[in-house]
Length: 199
Image (cartoon, rainbow, N blue to C red):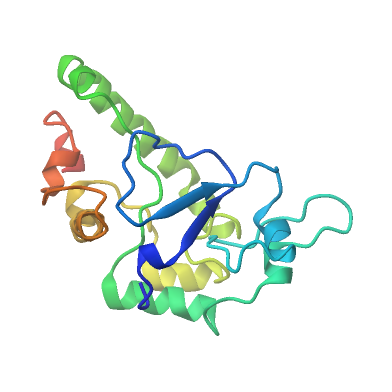
């Protein structure tokens, strides 16, 4: 992204990697800081040069500084940059996944449908509040009316159809970065029993 390849960076995490079974591509250096310090503290100590974060983290302890206090954004206008990216690509990056073992999905198809319905109900119940909450807003730093104008009333659309272009880009990037070894179709990510409303 922006002309910097993944093997030109030493990646530092402050929590254990959650995908230990994933083989990192050749040349990618990932290290974990185990001191318990926040990214802001590592930045202040000069041990890292940049932070990738959806928002500035809260200060820890009296007199602590937030990430935003210690670092400047890579973008002159972060709100405009987010809005422009979405308007140009139609991509609202997917940040979370629910993973189920394939044999369980195949053996208990009602479980797949039940999970889909539970997530839909939870989203419907909290969607308006999430757009109003500055910590959850899909365009960090934007006002709720701006989010609705750009992304509509439901930025978190569920289903393969509304998200196909995002998922295809995700798979393309995963292949380009060496995280998967072959091209994959979007449908391979989902169980055959996925309810029609989520296709």
